[in-house]
Image 1 (cartoon, rainbow, N blue to C red):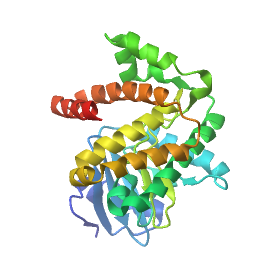
Image 2: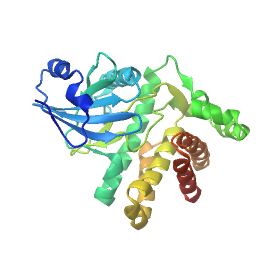
Image 3: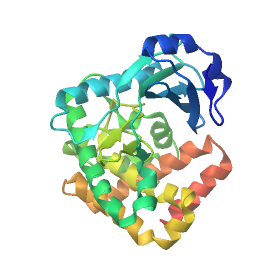
Image 4: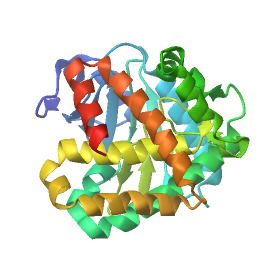
Length: 297
């Protein structure tokens, strides 16, 4: 009999449970909801081993599954020299509503490392920067088909078509061809995990073919680091703001390329406009809160 943990819903109790047990060759006895977002639920399944199940609330999750598998296959060919790791996948459900992947023992999301470890976490942020550069170089070498220019990303395309479009085009025109890489696109500290041995794991590969200045991923990471630390750990942010800024600096140092601060600031300007525009789809209050925070950063 499956036991469900706190907030685990009926999907885990009923949907294809026998198939899950059979395909994993493990008698899953417990399910617990680890995280819920507007688009997905993430569960911990426990049998003889532990697994992570990610469910799409709005239909098929096949594209994300296929992207993850492609990144895993590429990483597997380079893993001897890569500093980052990618969780392995087990299977995609027949109805494509969820997939199951490796559980990383005692790992925590990078967003919680700084409040928990303070100065000790700075080396992890530095290593995360190195891992992002390795990801960019590895994927740019391997993913050469169906590349999509960042200007075609729907939120950015809409902004370019709007009243400030000329200014955004001017920003993108500042970046020469050597800056362009296959980017992670949603590289935030919610998509990075660190285990007890300080190994860095990357996951949540929803968009893997965007071709853009590498500054985009740096800008998104720095902006979300500051914003979400304020929102999720407000007292820590007030007390340790210089440490948060130092973590961002160590991340940039870890990336290891000569950095044009003017270009980075220009990309942050573009990213912030995109980020706020995306929040409007989730509600006016969220968008205005984010816009206000960016005003002070």
